[in-house]
Amino acid sequence: MAAPFKNIAITGANGSVGKVVLKALLDAGNFNITVLRRNNSSSTFPDSVKVVDVDFDSVDSLTAALAGQDVVVSTVGSEGLNNEQKKLVDAAVAAGVKRFLPSEYGCDLSNELAAKLPVFAHKIEVEKYLEEKAKTTPLTYTYVYSGPFLDWGLQYDFIFKSTGSKPDLYDGGDTAFSTSTLETVAQAVVAILSKPEETKNRAVRFQSVVTTQNQLLKLAKEIEPERVWQPQAVKLDDITRVADERLAKGLYDIQTFAPYILRAVNDSRYSPTFKNLDNELLGLKQLTEAELKEIVKASLNN
Image (cartoon, rainbow, N blue to C red):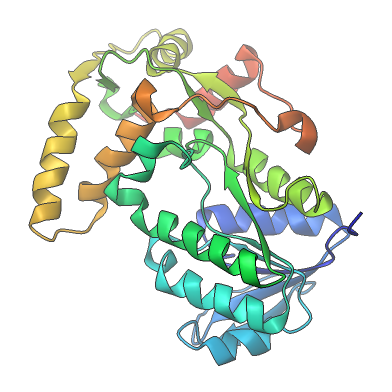
């Protein structure tokens, strides 16, 4: 059996996901962490972390930075999902890295409908690239599928819009979907690195809870009954039609791409509720309704 990984390089460590993942890796206490920081970045990190400034457009720069690393954990944002990650993969191969965790985190892209959504095109391309490399080199991979981020999605009015007390309910709001807190995502990454064989060359699926928009609305009403909640009925077909029109005009922004993610989360044909969970393998507990209610309470916006 392969030994647990020790030397971990992380990219995107100052982002919403990266910050939480970096902290979990440090708190685990059994990894040597190297942060790959973009040249000229002003981001700062704990003294216990080795920071290497790199040119993310240069495979040679990345390869030098990855010397001696066992794993690359990518948490880059949308701007780095395609060519930047491919260069990271090439550098990982050249440096002899053993495992690559691409910045997937979210919907289950093994679903054929989800895989065809324009918002996931770069992620699918990187997955295919990794799978080809794994056939001809020692590099292995793990896809981390968490569902949409629960706490982040509440805070930023994405999975449930509480601002203005007028939440959008997509196609009735009754579609059940798997969702995970950022902390659960981080703990999953730590567990994956401790179980090399069990997580090799496959997708790992986990969740903090399964919920619906209507359940979140019910909890919000219990938490703040004095608010006049006025849910708005929204059709996924309508918002994705507008997204298609924007895409045809070459408008590549969050306004264009968000509706596709909302489709993947709120349309049961897109496998938003995970089957064959890896929670037990990764040692991840699921939330009770009381714990979910506390997260909703902490994340409600006025």
